[in-house]
Amino acid sequence: MINENCPCRKKGCPRHGDCAACRSHHAERKRPVFCERESLPGRLLDGLPGRRRPYPVRRLRAGEIPDALALIWNVFLQFEAPEYSAEGIASFRASLEDEERIRNMTFYGAFDGKKLVGVLCMRAPQHIAGFFVDAAYHRRGIGRTLFETMRQDYDRQVFTVHASPYAVEIYRRLGFAPTQAEQVTDGLRYTPMRFEE
Image 1: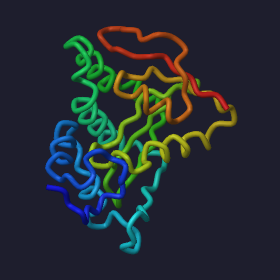
Image 2: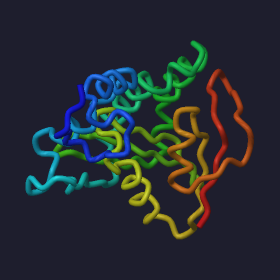
Image 3: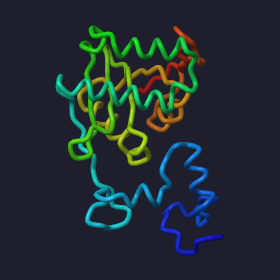
């Protein structure tokens, strides 16, 4: 049955108005349907459709890093781990427990009120070492805001990343291009990519 009054703004979607098909599609991807995601309390500015509330981004303080690592791990398990072997998952976990590595990174966080909902971490010279957004906050521009905020701290606009299979298209949309074919190191699959402006 087609809902003629479907509130979703994605009019070109082949499931537009077919609530059952839409819910099934999004359940498979473990994401809320667009109309429900938009209507969550406190997510819109002034109650006006399409005016999203900003998610402030700033550098994280040392005391906030454990929350950032927990968010990274949870999002990794949901979206990245299915693409990796047991060795890759163990390698990723070990990287989050490497205190010296963590100490040498700069963390940026996006917030919904006091809740940390997105993290981008950098290591020298200008390499993105982690980029994760809470699943409930995908497709709200948080990743782009994290990236653009981080860029303001660098005069030289050249960045590299080892993009996981899940993230390759996300990085392409940010302006990155692959520099080599996909590789595997310690069970972790990644595509080396570069951004230059």
